[in-house]
Image (cartoon, rainbow, N blue to C red):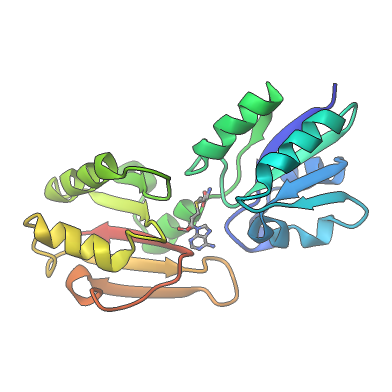
Length: 217
Ligand SMILES: C[S@@+](CC[C@H](N)C(=O)[O-])C[C@H]1O[C@@H](n2cnc3c(N)ncnc32)[C@H](O)[C@@H]1O
C-alpha cells in the first residue's frame, strides 16, 4: 500500500515551506492541491504527477488516487497549516484514505500574529471559513470581544467579511469606535497589504478573500 501525506505549504511565499515538507514532496510521485497551494511549491513539481483540484473535481481526483495508489506516495497540499481551518477536507481525506500522515505548515494566522505582535496564546482563534451555519462562531467572537480578548480570525468570503463583522458587533452592543482591527491581505506574497483601523472605519471598505483579521482593544 502506498502512503498519503497531508502537508501545509505556508500562506503564500515559498520561503515559508518547511524543509520537512520540501523533502516529502521531492520523494513523492503524485501531488494534489488547489491552485494557490500548488503555486507555492511550483519549483518542486517538475516530473511529478500533478493533480490541480477545485471544489467540484476534488472528490473524483481523490477517488482516482485511492484506486491507483499501489506503492506510490501522494502528497496533498494545503495552504498554511492543514491543522487550521481545513478540517472539513482533512476529515474527508482520512475517511477516503484510511490513514494519512499530517505534516504542519506555517498558518496565515501565525504570520498575522507575528505582524501584529499579538501572541496566539493570548488570543481567541476563530475561523468563519466553514460551510453551513456560523452562529456558534459568531457567539464566540462576540463573547471574546465583550471579555476584552484579542481575536485572530478568518472571515468568510461569501457573507462574513470585515464590513459584516463590524456590523454584527455593533448590532450586538459593541462600541466599534473603540475596537482596533488589523487586516492582513495576501500575506507573504508580493502584494501583501496591511490596513490598521478602528472597526468603525471599515464598514464601507472591500477587502480580498485572502485576508486575516486581528481584532483587539
Ligand atoms: C480554508 S482557509 C485555510 C487556512 C489555512 N489552512 C491557514 O492555516 O492559513 C482559507 C483562508 O485562509 C486565509 N489565508 C490563507 N492564506 C492567506 C494569505 N496568504 N493571506 C491572507 N489570508 C490567507 C484567508 O482568510 C483564506 O480565505
